[in-house]
Length: 406
Ligand code: GLY
Picture 1 (cartoon, rainbow, N blue to C red):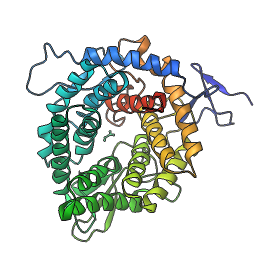
Picture 2: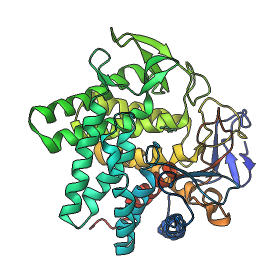
Picture 3: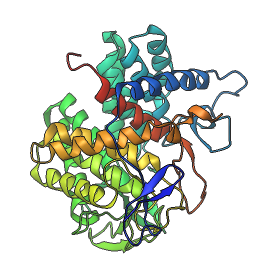
């Protein structure tokens, strides 16, 4: 049976082709170095343009957040937004790619302005906000004094997260959902920072941070991963007994039965990172099962709708979920000989699609890089470009294009 073509893309050749949650290229191909070169050329222009904050009023609103499809200027957040770390992370990745001191200077400035947030206990997202850019700075900054500053911020941020620990649920509180003590699957990406900081500090305090980070991931693996490898988005618990009280609505289509695409990708990557940091086989199993579900539902080179249970080829896409999933699969490929070849092949094909002009801003005036992402469809149903999808696309593209000797 012929595949159904939609704007140059083909839906899987099944009888129910119009009722699919994914769109796929006719012939998914692995990403090429010409595609990654073009991506980084585009990124250089977009990221440099966004660093010009002339006309923005400090203090406050200035970190790029995203833009819907037709917007030509970024909406920006203050340093307390959960997305504030992604733009600095992109600047570090540009520095890693080019070794150009101009990118180093920008990455330092945009990271340094964020670091006071490390002492804030009001968010569970400090792994994204501090751990990601400061972790890149610790790895890439040539100046030892700067690296010490980033190291201190990671430790401070982990200690801040640790104040949100609940010993009954055995997890770091994500937030109040519907007035109840809640966990969100995205937190899989924040918990690894506790393990990393624990390793940096050592001793009893370090062991506690490490144990809390690992235990948080184990709690997510126990409650959020369904038997088929799909995931819940938000769950609430009784903080006095630790008992699960049930799912609540978040960004997905159905709080009980559906799988929010980006949440699945956060789970894949968080569990893979957790396994890398601990060697715990339960986390490897969670990474394998969530990745297996992704590949079964989405498939190499295909891009999902914002929720994997929204069966319409015309529903908003979430290309950011695909970019995060690609980054997750590249990480898992490095760790797990059993699934390595399949994960790598799927990641390369996904990047092959995401770096095609249909999925980047190259032919648009949009200030971001990866288009056709979604933020929170129940609130805003339009596609756009957002800094998290851009950051994980650059991370993955850099990883597959980096000479192996580097
Ligand atoms: N962490 C929030 C999101 O992925 O939208």
